[in-house]
Length: 498
Image 1 (tube, rainbow, N blue to C red):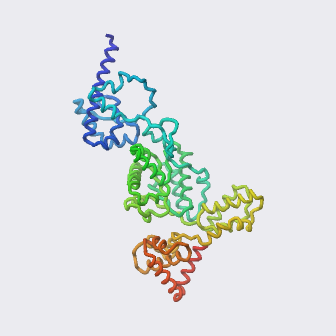
Image 2 (image 1 turned 135 degrees about the horizontal axis):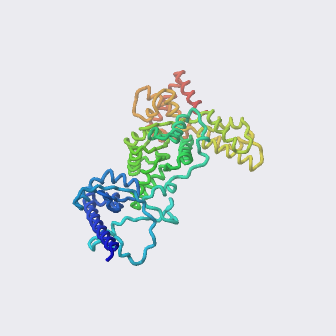
Image 3 (image 1 turned 30 degrees about the horizontal axis):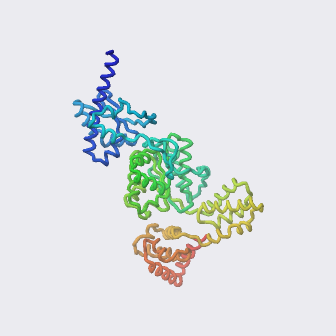
């Protein structure tokens, strides 16, 4: 027998011995940590081989490597030391699975299954981690290719929501109501290191929260393409989590979300009263913050006012910078309309823009929709845009906005006027300095919205409809006897209506 043949045979025997040792280590680990922990974290470990006084093990992702190093590396080293009768260190490396070649119908004699002793064959086959899965689209339909199960980088685009090309920083109109939120979003997009974590943006519908989150993603995509960014709604996060539970693929889910550089979740209020999703979101949030990865969250309320959200989650969400996007001012609405009008290709008289800015106060989205309707009418019908045609085209929208004031707006405006906290509107405090503004807010909610008494009561900390009735009666009585009180209420009404 030649030297080369003898050397090859010796190496084969060494590898066989090493595989037997690894099989015994796996059996002991499974027994010690339990089936669930073993399947989640240790089952994907594969043996690479010895390197000096260390044993190299491979996992398919960076997230898994970090977790094993932090929780199991010492025990792995101890078990390998016992097997080899000498001090051994363990090195865990990332080795994404490669696309498998077509397998011959007859198993190769040199395969791990064929080499393992008979008593170990069954365990080796069962423990072999699946290398690939058929890629599935978000709607569950099968894609046309293979994706590494733990290759999170290759699924970011599938999980992330699509970005609107209109929502960039240079198309965001800055005014007093949103200047803090804009500056914070810009800082996150441009900073080398994480400036504050998380950035929590909150405000009413259509005020620009989503625009700023898209702008962050666009900026990073252009100037920092190496960064992994995921942007999606809280509902889609919940959907992905439930699907991972159903398919028993939670490890890939955790790796996907906990190994990104920037995670942005829109409308986080929708995870309220969903305990399992909140638990997973809580641990994902902590994992990213601990690794100094950026988190950006948006909601319709501040962290402390989110309903159905655990107290510890509220506390974590308020850790970084909380930026409120206030309802738009007349000047900001006019600036937005002027900016949009420049790009539509139709001449819009300034008095029409001023009319719209004065009449449509609910949110920016509705304001832009009104402008689009006017432009479409002018383009399709061929009539110039005038104040008269604008009122004709937008009859329904203008009528709806005449009385469209939300209870949240009323609470915010009354709290600002009387210099109390917005949370006092929902609290059980009965001090006159708090109770009287709360009664005024209930009164205005009854006068300016179409909500029923029980609905109004629920918006004020779950109060009964009789409490709202008492507040309305009390405010009417005070208006009749106290001139200054009546002026305050009337001033608030005018501010809210226009």
